[in-house]
Length: 323
Image 1 (spheres, rainbow, N blue to C red):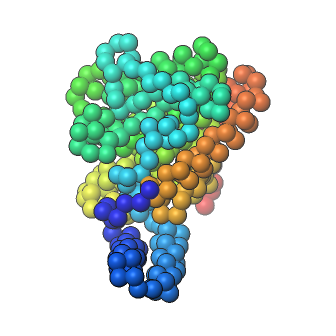
Image 2 (image 1 turned 30 degrees about the vertical axis):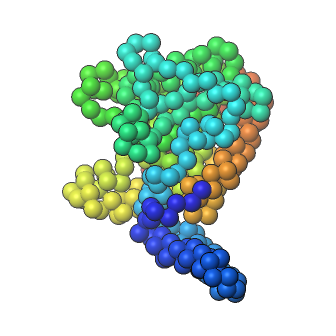
């Protein structure tokens, strides 16, 4: 699923070639002139340009791809990977939060609980979804669904895609930090497998409140960070324009996250990003989920909880040494 109307700065050489190809194809069809050799030449240039651009992405360019408005969101993946998804609403305390969606579904006939953070594609949807920034009731709803999954012995799959939890006054009044902290605490002891995938943005505690999993994965063009590059730049460089520099310094690209043990697996995307081929992106994601659940299902509950505890306890370990 490609979209040439939204072009990132570093993609412009590729988009120019793709527009040339479209124009040449239209001219050929209308004038009945054989330009197959010219088409093949441009197609070859397109493939070469794709490889040149997308195999050498900087951390900031990956951030831009992770925010692409045509990128598949949680509900897109849920619709392509799972069947009979039944969305459940509300936290039973305050209200519904549409920035988090979730409910039971089937994965190849196996009942699971799938929960995801959801953005919108236009102004109306983004207002409804709060631009993918959950309120405290969203996290409480997510935990309610996880506890339901534990009760019925269903594995849990969480899809992370948020710039961060909503920082507004109302969210603070209803204790968003406490809601995230409770989720982190309680997810560590839930007695069913938990698989977490960062499908786009994984921002701060807003992501971590749904990401205490037995296996944590990230899509190739996602990022997972304690702070957004703009926020980091505003604090350390006193200028949000330093976001590209901050993105490099934060070391939050998938290859660094894998190296440091923050994520267990990096899931490949179609060349150019998941938005260019929804079906292939969903296929890769489903294969990773299937593989993860197959491994986790072999563990006893005791082993599952022990390994989950050790996994997060070892993050951030360091050793002192004398110079």
